[in-house]
Length: 610
Image 1: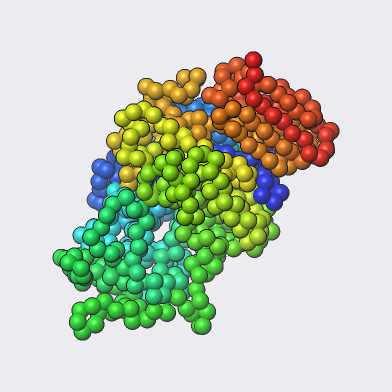
Image 2: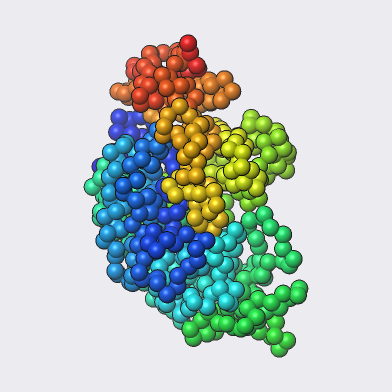
């Protein structure tokens, strides 16, 4: 395998045998939409022109990408989760791959490698497709299911450019496509064969990316599928209850349930609490609803939707169905086999639904990574954050970065324990985590003060540090603006904004455009000659400490990223080490701690020096 990495328990091991911590960023948020014509969601979705789009230029045009990659490296990231979408590869029709886009992805990946960045590809999908309020799958996939995208919005079955975009997964088009993709042959015999067609086309699209980049030595591997939903798989009476995910707005009525959406999507206006879903009776189906024909739901004599068979999606032959076990795990095995045929030795970064907390993976493959996502969900959902009164999921209200970091550390400690116990002790890499920059009603855009964001980020990274969790932060969007954020569904989580180029929080020109840089650009171990056992950075005193269980068999130094934003361009630091010597590389923002030959616990402390 060209990349030369393997794993040992939760750690990546580099070609020198050093324990390696992957800290990276997603590149980038606007990659979900076409570059030509501009597909950012506030501009609307062109249903008629679905074939004639190009994603070349996402995440950034080639004549701009070098600057962004240089900035990412300058900020201490060593890994890119590089976004692609199925639509970007195969938008023109089944089996028609966009060669210009594939060449573009290969070139961005190569340039990342020139700068020492490891890359894994993220085939990004949210709520199935742009045409169901998310991103990912091409338009033509709906035709296989007998769905008519032009009718989705009128029938209340897709909300575009929506703050609460995850709710689209509860609506009929997205829920149906996910169900067919993972378990269509079992659950929809009427459309038998669609599951295989969808999976085959998807696998061939990602394999086409792999064919372009497998020979590049910086390519670690491939994510299976971003934040997949299980659709209706495993659902029973929960089809009677709707839910909301983002809580910034107030609503007059309870959310529509999946059952109500099923009835409305078939052309039945559904009314309650003084509101009507699909008042014009538009059907999203070309030939009627297959779920109604299968006996899942019906309309009673009073015109009310009823769940005719609550067990249809939940049980088969007396066995309770699971979207993860019965749909996603078999798909992951297919994905691994297909990608390894093109790129032997590649890592496979596996994901399940982000709403499921207790996934399991029983497989000794050392090149599989638990790449689940995690966010400080209350901050993300409400877009508010008060460092002086932080309301935690634990129910406690705490103050200050130490206490907030401890609350988040408790959450991530549970994730790390689950990964050890239920995911075959594979490395846990948070494929996404991050914070909303427009928090607190966009106050930072008026004041230029990203202090609250810096505290939130510091708390996030403290939690990762406590458990040595790998992660790729969401995200770096090259064309982020204050007005439209990352260009997708009103999200604004980018660590960089074009509108902040006039500000510079750090000592280097590349720091311009960064937001709350000191919160995410912080010291951390990169490679360790042994197993790290403790790591902490105190931004108040700018003191970094690291303890390693040294391995005398490793012939290489421990490397620590030491950012100029905390220690100045000359990296003037005072060093105290219990073994070996430390050399400071100011240009590379590195401290190289050579403790070769030592064994057992060794430690180093780095703090500002004269």
